[in-house]
Length: 157
Image 1 (tube, rainbow, N blue to C red):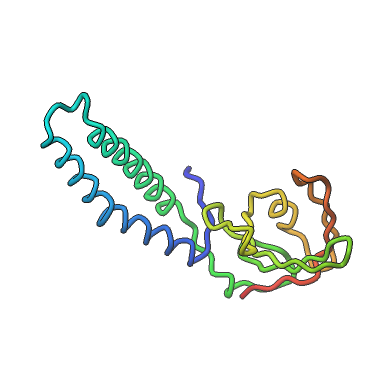
Image 2: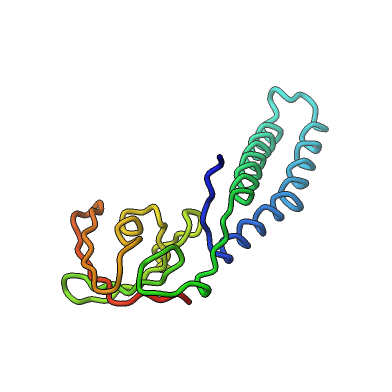
């Protein structure tokens, strides 16, 4: 059985947009670059040809990866969820040991962006939070050491 990949609607759309761009813009452009480079003659010493072929390989690998992820996507709309338990898609307000507030949303691996407060469900903090409730204290082992948080609020927006 294939493992489903949870992601938000926005993450799914972002992957679909990237796949469309790769297939309709990048792939044809690299094919043209290969044809142009071929026209220059001897391929053994043709840097443009080798660079274009390498780029083509990277594009094809990313296309395959995106098609796989999209086919296994389990799209989750957090606005259809509710409760005070942390699940995928939840936006959580955490208090650290100094009562400093931090807000994170639990998202898919491809959607994660810590600078924007979006953490992967498979990250150390994400794994520690899933299944917990408002008021729970959570201990997280991070690269910079042990961190302690209290879940102040769970929101599904």
